[in-house]
Image 1: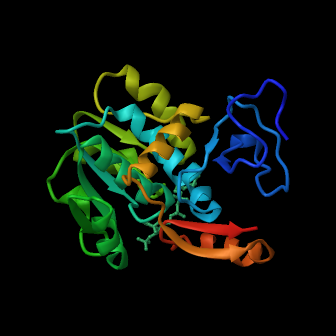
Image 2: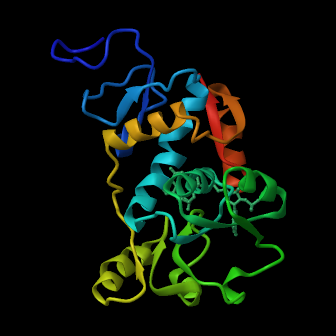
Length: 240
Ligand SMILES: NC(=O)c1ccc[n+]([C@@H]2O[C@H](COP(=O)([O-])OP(=O)(O)OC[C@H]3O[C@@H](n4cnc5c(N)ncnc54)[C@H](OP(=O)(O)O)[C@@H]3O)[C@@H](O)[C@H]2O)c1
């Protein structure tokens, strides 16, 4: 159903979005405001393809928006094969940045195909020891740290984490010190405009969600176990 004052949506429209920290998206029905993070599904997409956009891509976008990515800016994306990582590579490509992506051997080709300029296999090389520096380091998988990455950042470089209590403290302190800093928003400031931006990117052929596996809702336990291996490539989707 739609409320009497709703103009953007009609009964039967296919929509995608996120209810944020109120969750509940496995429910049969969910009530959301017209102004919430919700939009018409991108043309030609299925529900299964649209669902992960508001997870990995929206989270990657929220992080990357803080880093003024553009042509000439050098970014390293650590954990480039995950939900946030595969989105981060494609968004950084769209913003025109020079991208070094770090992942495991098995995902090198995929990550390159998403738009990385160069790929480092973390099983063979430690990027913190090769002497290269970056304007931005995005830890898209929560496995690195500002302390270990510091030496690989330019003097006013930005470290973007996705996880970790210590990063909340560092994000309060380091921006006041004027040098290398951690930027981390909790809760993430995600807007309807962000969802509309991603929809446009998809329709322009500039973004595609990477889906590793799909499970029916009945197999949610098995799906969760697979996600908890921390070895998925891109996203895992539940089909309802
Ligand atoms: N997804 C969200 O909506 C969301 C929201 C807020 C915060 N977060 C946080 O963001 C982080 C990433 O979430 P995600 O869902 O994108 O992760 P994910 O998809 O579960 O990450 C899995 C990927 O991480 C890689 N990986 C595992 N261990 C690694 C390591 N030591 N070094 C480099 N890569 C490694 C794996 O590939 P390999 O084969 O290379 O190991 C795999 O491709 C998590 O810390 C999560 O808590 C997620």
